[in-house]
Length: 267
Ligand SMILES: NC(=O)c1ccc[n+]([C@@H]2O[C@H](COP(=O)([O-])OP(=O)(O)OC[C@H]3O[C@@H](n4cnc5c(N)ncnc54)[C@H](OP(=O)(O)O)[C@@H]3O)[C@@H](O)[C@H]2O)c1
Image (cartoon, rainbow, N blue to C red; front, side, top):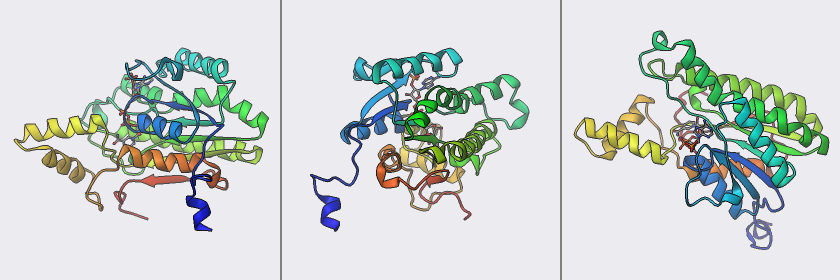
């Protein structure tokens, strides 16, 4: 039986014939997910504001997803180029809020965090999930963050609250559309060692006269430590997403998968 799972004729994960939209696919965990999905046979479309040279125009749509117009442009391109989607991975998210606690978070910052972390998923789902429901199949994956259950008040209040809103929205959507054949799942990463994270750790370390290992330790300490002693890699996040998007996860919906090396200290 295990030989069947391993054989190259019947790979454990197979996404061939699936049309996938993956937002934020030019860097970090998004780029790793695009590359893994392609390797597993999916037809992928991805998006960001700027197309890197290495990314083929055939799989890319330029759009700023913080606006309703950007989301509408992307949804239109998805329908035109692929005739709809079978898998949607909402990877977009992040924060540009300043440190300084709740007092420094004006309405403009709150709006920006919600526009980046909540509204693109809400808008794209509204455009693209109805066709999945009509077909009776589809998978929607919302990428949240452990910050939603482990906010850091100095700098991540608005980001954490926006991810918490995304979490609740995702659960509600799953209740509505799972009976119609569409699975909705959350992936909640802890610290991911993306290119941006490496740059940040290097800058942090330089400020304290240390090397990147010092910077990484400072970040891990700020999270209360990571039991496995290292951040998660973008490839590990991509692997979890690919499994959840595949038929292997056919009974999984409405739940959240934390991938954080054990960072969240409670059950
Ligand atoms: N990194 C972590 O430690 C960590 C931890 C927990 C959760 N997460 C979550 O994991 C997900 C991936 O994070 P990441 O760190 O891998 O991403 P990242 O490396 O910061 O990549 C950002 C991507 O988003 C695109 N992007 C940024 N603003 C955009 C906009 N307004 N419209 C469209 N695209 C935009 C960027 O391209 P352009 O700049 O060209 O637009 C790029 O492709 C996010 O949801 C994040 O919240 C990350």
